[in-house]
Image (tube, rainbow, N blue to C red; front, side, top):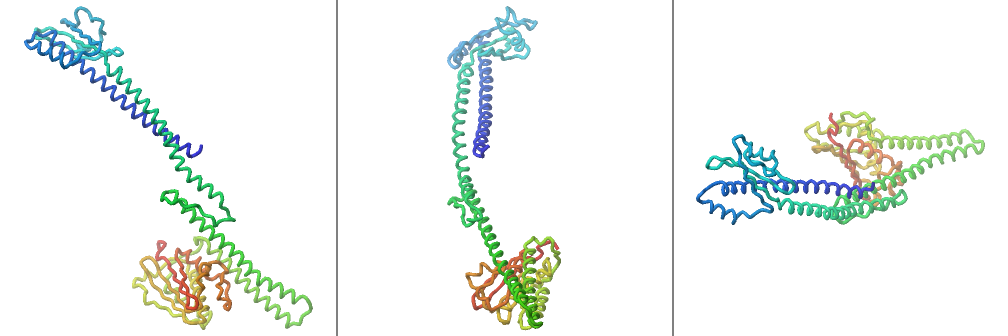
Length: 456
């Protein structure tokens, strides 16, 4: 069943159930009131009839005049006076009235009864001279026979009109709700991996459909970025892996094309070994980069002092190249040592910081690199600043693509894997990495790592 049909049926069902319940309650209440009120009116008339017919009062004329003036005669009104004997039975018959009705009046002092549209109400009345009577007044309940029927017809008519109205309202609402969804579905069908640049039209009004459209467009943005990154990765990886392979194959073919001297074979094997080592490094870096794309649950996380980690990284980097100059500023370290502790994988964090600091030193032509450490209530903050060649502004958006290298780095060795690898490691630790750079002036890298992101 289509959703707009479900909406229509649901609204109609709810409305019909509510309207029937409300109409039934109104009809029952009014009809019940009509019964009670009319019996009360008959009972009053029975009391007045008893006063007029059975009592010899001085002001009986006044009572009769008041009865005629203020109490109009009811349709088909009849009056019955039945004398009761000492055995609590009526004399001279019941005049066609039900015996059980008369017995109820005698036993209870009053009683009501109706036969179709004729209503009876009676009282037991004792006169001043000690005689006992049953006084009954009957009449047609005009309100019940006419007005209640009119009310019932009015309720059914109102229900029919209201049902038509709710059908039109349901159709309008369902179309209002379903039409934007249909538009979204039709637009989504047009989008595929070949045209991920397409976006849904964002409604001007601020409603759930607008939020849905914006959310879907955001998802498309992420998918497009992911697809482009994957394409660049495959393209760059193919190129980077193909270069040493081509060199190895070419060198081997050249060496085997004819008989060579031992020195020539030695030179060829040395070249092949160098290219193979480059290929090995690139392959391992590629595998490591892929591994850091996981959620890190398989990695062993433990307490790490971030200030000690920085000192260890400095020692490692300067051992790799003694010409690298690194200056550390710990003046912003908080007094509370707990703000310097994070839970993470020390080896991975060591690798991430090493990659970033080595890049800073390398692209600064061995100028001093400054490292500052601080902390907020939630994060440990590491700032790494160099005075190197910088990154062109229009290329900053690509620096996290594997194997991407800025256009001004052709004089420097590298594979374009270090920064993406470091970023993946930082993200694995629920942290953040922000790079700001100005061409020919240097680059600043800000790393944030949450303090006690896990319960220690």
